[in-house]
Length: 402
Image (cartoon, rainbow, N blue to C red; front, side, top):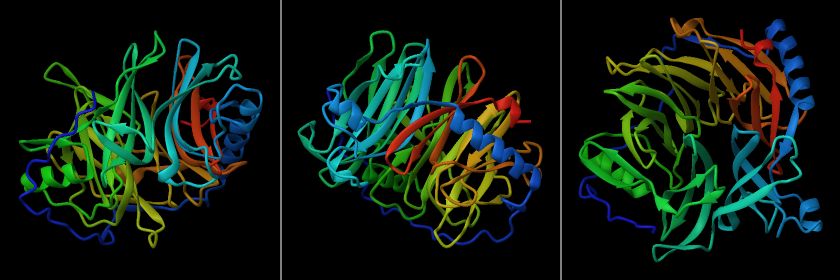
């Protein structure tokens, strides 16, 4: 049963800290000039095109053939997971018009056998117009999936109800192929646990005396999970964001997310922040304001509570993603525009030594890349093509991640 809670801590004001340009970055990584990275990029773009696995949106062809009740005129933001020969993908879609409009959007899970993408199943998680816990949902936005355990996917999306954005989730049983009930994520800062909502985040941070940048109405958590063992327990880490505010959060159960830290140096961050635990550090990458054509890479030391001096990296307005491969850590991002993919090899001993090893002009638009490894050791890249296709392709990481 969906249960909304009353915010606690909202008797205090949330202190807003201004964004400003990074004053003294440790380095600046310029992209698109290295001949070797460009040559690898040509190979990568070709392999992604040839390694097509599936498009996951409801197609007009599927509708005409009676395999779908409508077709997606807009689809965006993907995450995928592969297990036992089946591939699962999450996204949000608009079946009413070819526009990214949360008033008409649906959060969705799609899955099919890797060997037969034509046997696609679509499950709606939630839509604008739903009524949850006595509240009408009028907007739906970012939708992601997270593997919680051997038999459970966690499906999360953003929904606005009574003027307030919330993070909702539903469990999905991999063995039974069934969805559980819709519930509300929680957000904790200090001693306060509120709903994971725009107002709940501000109130909990205010009560804990934690300032932050200006938040917009939309909120989110990032799709990439990483973890470390703490006191004998598996603790998951990811990023959370709302407008210019972004931070690291952690969770033991993927239901309640606890504030960890946000960059403590001047920066111009905006929207989605990619994070990844590697050893005792959480690596962190986020784009900056529209006037700043660079994202920044930094790391938070979980033992000392200190942030690394940031490295700026050429980047357009997209979101990045980390991938760990054979003991190394790599950042996938959009170095020039949303038709390019860049791969940065991160120097975990000295961030300033990180370098762009692939700069690829893709064969199609390639919005918001998400990467993960297949069980056979190959890698996958899911992405949005022109807000029309939710696409997955395979590539051989050994050819590029070295």
